[in-house]
Image (cartoon, rainbow, N blue to C red; front, top):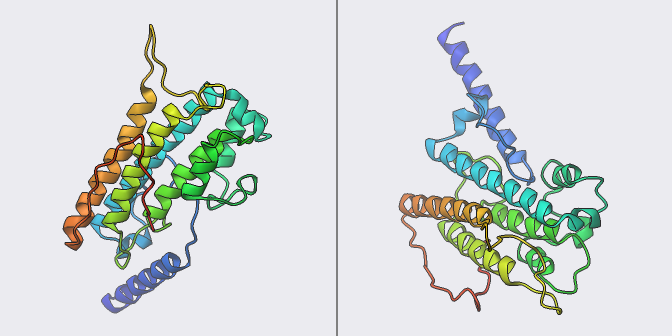
Length: 240
């Protein structure tokens, strides 16, 4: 192949990658596993793009773990969704391309879905609503993209706000109660043998979002407005 032909071939690959990037639609987040090796679209990706994708993927690994642990501690919830098993409920959450708009939630996403999950009167699958709220909120902070290319920008403020929202959501999960005083969802367990595994996954998500926010802030030279909240009275912050 001549140099001219090789150049033309490369330009075709780049054009195809750019076209694919422009035509991509919001999904349910990256699937588990290692980032793929070299592909044509990587010709229009920077090291930062790959760095952002790696962080997003690790966040969704923790979100999957949180969903599974919540379903195991609250098995009545996946039964409310009509799923035949916990595994089916997990599949419906993370493998079906619904863009985090589920009919069972009235197509609510983001903070609206989180509010439903933690409302005492909600009769549906609270774990589903909680994870849909968290995951779609994170996706909104990532610009509702699963892949990033040279012309894509991330907003450091949105990523920072998402980290604070995860802090608030974690606190609310541990404290939201029904009228009879029982927790709406069981998570961390204190006692003879403490189970704080939920806190570790929340901490990973918060740390990854904060790290990425710091990198984007430095890269774009746009200062992030940082806030200190009392979790008991904190409100969710905008992520788009």
